[in-house]
Image (cartoon, rainbow, N blue to C red; front, side, top):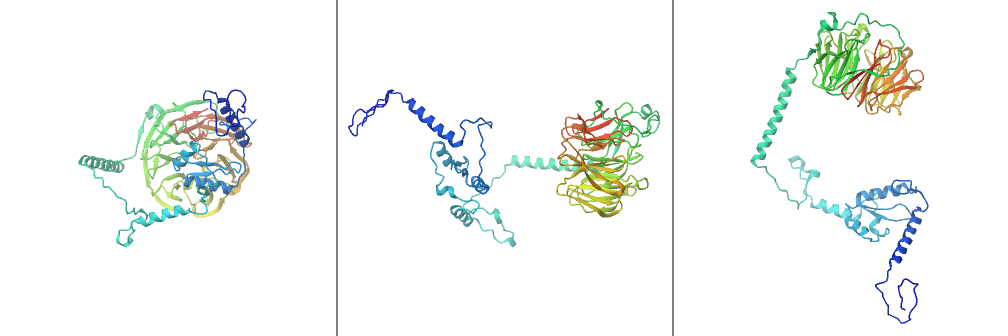
Length: 540
């Protein structure tokens, strides 16, 4: 049978057997094109792509149901052996990894048809190791050097090598050995110098402005005579009226002077504490040098004559605000996270410290000694907040629990824990004293009612919209309790109405995390924010 592959239809020329006529000049591209079209049509029918629009960047994605156990088996098989079988029953394809199965992957790229029914692909990772792998493992174990007796000091354990392995001892030449010795000497010198600096360092205060010119001869901490506290209605600030520069690293905490707010204290990651004038020329008036590590927390006494500073150098310093001297130094074994003086006028000599060792410790400023330990939490302490006329306090920790204590009695009187709770990283109390709010790590501010000494969650009220997960962004109330403000990990400040929990305004305050927010105690619409961009901003 002779066939002529011409442009015309195929014709039968002769019935002579075993003879074929071939015309190499004939164009057969239309036959190849036709075969490719048929193959594309089959593929389109197989994957159900025909007549569908793209629903993915690279094509069409269809949902197929398959057994989870089958998928898990193939997933682990791909990670262990380097190949897997497509769990889709309509198309039992084999997928190979280029790194673990180079030969199989290259054959598939060249067009080699791999049969998924091959016994090679029937390995079950979940059922156990394959026989070949077991044999290989047994060979490796048999060739391994004996672990020896551990009592003689020759025990090698799982680190023993193979018997055929040969190790080459590489020895350093004289130049390399000298260079290594020099680097070691420099390292030791740096350690010795840093120790000497810590031992010889004396805390001090630097005055930037003349007290006579700035304050007219009155005491540094005395408020201006025209600044008096009166009941007022607060408003949400609209614009930034002053930016405070001076810190070289991010600002971690800021605190207004109690009752009057004519001065502001800021603690930074550059180990410095700065005092700012808010009412007058709005500049830095003092810098307190006392810590060798980044600042973590600050806390004023009721009259502002004393403040506490906690830093990552594992020290608590008690400062005299007027003279800038350290009156007491408390050395710790762990990092301090929060420090709070008791607001009760009769107990201003006592303060509580929450640290990374899961304990709350009570200290006496006069002696600098530890007087009591509250030990119930399972992880680091984040916050300590007084309520109920300062008779009780609530502590929060990374263990996602809230404990209620009575001051001076190291026994938990109420334990609050819930599977839906997250760690509380910052807290505030409403000026009325009837509500406590906590900044949770799930971008939510929760509310608890503290009326009559109770501590019950108010599930009808919560504040959300900001992003605070992973950061201890501070929260604060306005002086009249009408508004609640919070920082944000994206540098924003959110303002909510306390009654309706409605977000009234959002301000882009910083280029980095806005870690602290403080509302002025007297000025109705002034708010200070601090962030990790190294600046503080005054809003009005």
